[in-house]
Image (tube, rainbow, N blue to C red; front, side, top):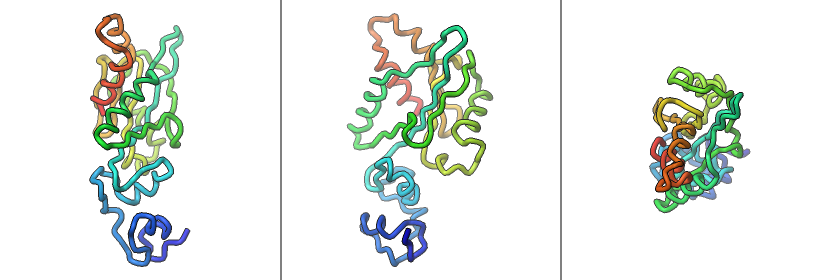
Length: 190
């Protein structure tokens, strides 16, 4: 890949976006849409339709596997559509990696996870043991667990969890729609 100015962005991409490919640019500190994803990171995510001139939010969604007694961790497909629509109305592209962007795992069932468990899952399944993993600077990490005590909370600056057992317990209320509850909780914690 051609990069004659050695600014970590290839010539074809600089041309496409209106930059001068023979002039070095500090793309690590250039963020035209102010979405906290610099132009080098935008280039790394362009295969997933990232756009440096339109705000993007990337989230890797990992889900807990099924329990020994049939306990299920759940995230409705319609909830994802509701979340994407909510961001699209604000001219923000919501990218969720549910297995199509090099991330997303199913991690082992644990009936109840605490903050320490969540940190371990973060290290092993999001960063894969690499504290310098480039995804850390781009992606948020949104876990769907069976139970963590409450419906959802943020356990570090770019990571949050929602508990399907807590949300499912509210679905008996006819005024609460399952899809809206899950989407709302996920967006709230994000």
